[in-house]
Amino acid sequence: MRPLEYLKELSFPRMGGSDSETKASRMITEWLTEFGYSPQIEKFDIYTYIPGRGSLKPLDTSLSEIPINPVGLSADCDMAKEIILLNIPEPEWAEKDELKNKIVLMPHPPRRKWVSLLVESNASAGIIVVDDIRIRAYRTLGQEVARDFGEKIPLATLGYKYAIGLINENVRRVHIKTEHKRFDGNSQNVIAELAGESERTIIITAHYDSTPSSPGAQDNAAGTVELLQLAKKLAGNKFYRNIRFLFCGAEEMGLLGSKAFVRNHIHELRNVDFLINLDVGGNPIAPVMLRTLGTDNLEHFIGGILKSKNCPAQVESDIYSSDGMPFARFGVPSVSIARAGINSRGHSPYDDYWQVSNRALMEIVDCAEIVLSAIADAKVLPFQRTIADEMMKKVDEYFKERE
Ligand SMILES: [Zn+2]
Image (tube, rainbow, N blue to C red; front, side):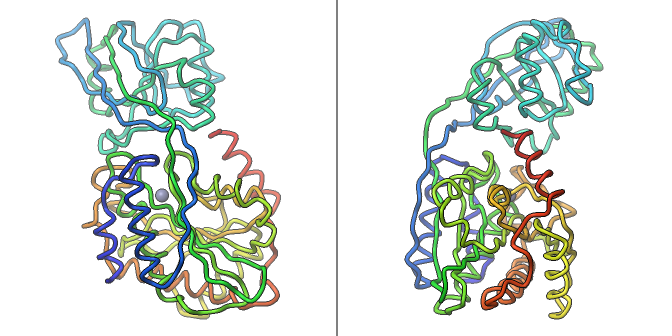
């Protein structure tokens, strides 16, 4: 089968902890077995939910009831209160007394600093305004934020077009109701290995889960089938380094699969020289983009290799919000390979297989293979196995905001 055919089969919502995510993990396991691998499934616990529904009824105007979506892992509610707009850029601007007992309409994602502001101000609920095409993307609280604040505050998302209506009609009081089922569940990583001649290891990852309600074709059935294609091409080879193919679950819920892998394999991480992460692909119009997370030395090495192989790609050095991040905390440098641009509708129901071309998938497979082959057999690693201080600072800030 061509990568695009695998992708079509995988393009169904695969939310972390759901039965359909498990189904996707089985499909990946079967394909890897067909290619000659003996894949392992590593389960891990997650706190997850079944996406629910909600409504917002403006009480002092003729506007009709509006659909809202509970933010996953926040509290549910059934309340009539005053609603106010909070459009400050940072929580430090807040007049906490003004939020007390109010339903707070705001643009900010439900990260720790905003959720804790609402809880500390004794706000009654938070309504987060989102892009209309992502209205069913179901924002989710991070696991730690959910544990600390989840049951203390109801949160929901509302599409921009409805938010404008509320503001223009000067709506003051609303009745909101949300309901969704939270539960302790599990997700899984699928791991296949190409044994090498030494203890040194390169990991190649792609997350195979999606956000709720999105078929997750570009994000990230694309990376998943690119990784499958690489595994298929390399089957039977032996390099100096071990090659581990890591298909991560529950990335969209806060990098939970890669965090679980790092936790469970902590003693092996010192043997891991490098990680290649494939997240978001399939758009043939957009250039290939590689984001290195390490030192300048790594960025220059990757840029040089691709140029020498006539592989056109944009190489830059920065963090990338995906499965390379938990490894960076332990000093493992990485590159994330992606392409997205016009019509990138990640995290929405429109991220379906028709958005993807086989050519786009293969271009990333080729690019990843060039990078991999330049390192897999090198006895001396051609760049420093470290994360530059200024990058590490960004990594720490990233997790501080989300955990
Ligand atoms: Zn992704």
